[in-house]
Length: 209
Image (cartoon, rainbow, N blue to C red):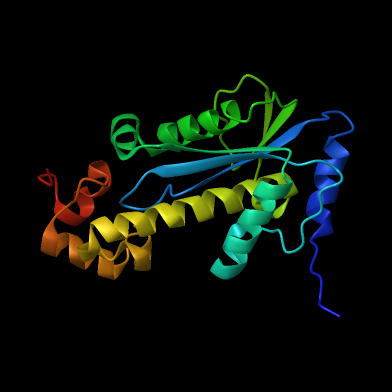
């Protein structure tokens, strides 16, 4: 028999909250730290009948497993939405505010009104529903874990698309994070249109325009 791995405690957490808040959405982001690319956020609504094997914090799951879970979450979620804030918005608003904006867009795009939004981390976006921060939420709530998978996979796919357009930066390898390779390519080629200029001062100095 195939081994089934169900992190049931994540689903139990949401089930307990649904006694008071029948419709819960989990919210998470991907891509706050990189030097390039949009920041992504996802919102997901599951129900008590939905149990998904292997669902967990997306950082604890292999890329192959995340891709499979992405399809399963989309197929089985009651509602979901993936949204972004652009590089231009990140540079104009700062990364925290841009992330909050992406989260707000994700919740607004669900098509249903949640009774409660569970947001990974310690900051809340401005939402039209009740919301609650959950520290390490992607390892606590199934709904947040599902959102973390959608956000992470969506952004990784986006970075692979960017890599095809800007092959010299090797985005497919580092996904825009400030690795030694990425910094080396930045110093060699300078910033591209998809780089966050406000993130590059320590690497390229103030005159990186």
